[in-house]
Image (cartoon, rainbow over all chains, first blue to last red; front, top):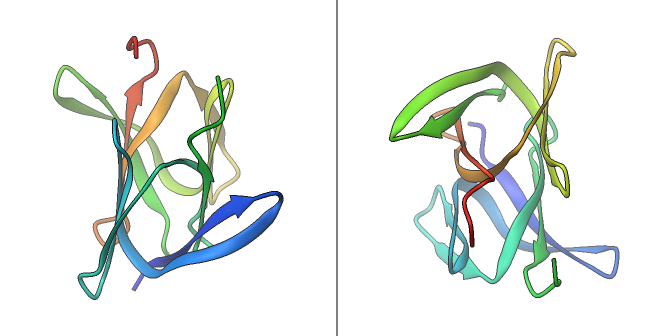
Length: 66
Length: 66
């Protein structure tokens, strides 16, 4: 299986927010995550990096002005 | 291996832009993709969806006004 763990990066620290993520969808309301166990999570964030070999997804809070 | 193929979604069609992507990084200059073979690509896009089980990454052009 190729699921990854998702981390929120705050102040340079990585906080685990969901394990075994199977699907990520980015939209107007932030990022939707779904684990392979059916758990879902919506976070006000954007996708920063995905390391598919390292099974690691990094998100950053969306409230950063652009 | 858990690499995925990356597609750009334009007008509802999915165009393959890179196979065997191992790393994706989103930044101010769009999306950086790196394949497991060392190929790199920068596209003016944002990450739309990643289906880790289906090995599919969907990107959309960044020039959509928000």
